Image (cartoon, rainbow, N blue to C red; front, side, top):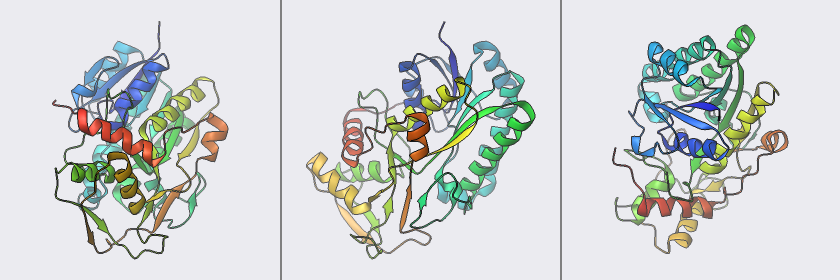
Length: 328
């Protein structure tokens, strides 16, 4: 009988793709989602359990029903601007709810835990190639909440033997090449889907904030990873734990990143359409260049990111943009 894996936030963008990857790897993904930001239409690869992350009784019942061999935790609020305006919301929704989840997992004897964290835990290391040993100095409640969850996992490992793998990354892009699931936020805030909306006439233009940065083309550079490469890493992390290799942290990135202009240029090539663009001043707090390496993940997990080229990420996102959507 296949092993069940409880996927927190499995009806969201990354979580739904993780469910597909888990099913392909021979697991049964059990989605647990409140549907506040997730979509029931995205649950296609295994059972669905609706509930709040903070509801301990509901979590206990789900653990008892499915007896999962592991938890994969994607559920979180993740809009940095909102975190700056309402930090209490992020501490409650991300940290307190994750504590409830971790306690429920330990109580159920489910001691393998894969956590989707963020490179925002490092803070502003402009122009530095991030590694897992880069000091963590988060600058907003989003990054701080993720770092706090990482620290909770360490404490529960020491006290209860909770084995964990933590993944840190920047921007996720693209969609399932088969078109079964994709990115569908309301409202949308990520660069590539916003740009595709502009190409498709769903918004007037894409605004580029700052063209005078000390980069080859004057625009900011950010790291991106294709969502399918990202979730493949999470499955490898799960297998790492099941092989008894112990807790670890892995960064996932390309090591070089892409400028805003590069993203725009690639979108023109992929879609064969012009991108309506307006230019604005720099935004306060925007770093020049944020990139992460992934040497440890490649070496230890055998991770091979095959789709994390900008052309592939935009092509898969564009295909989903044209034909895919969720209604509920």
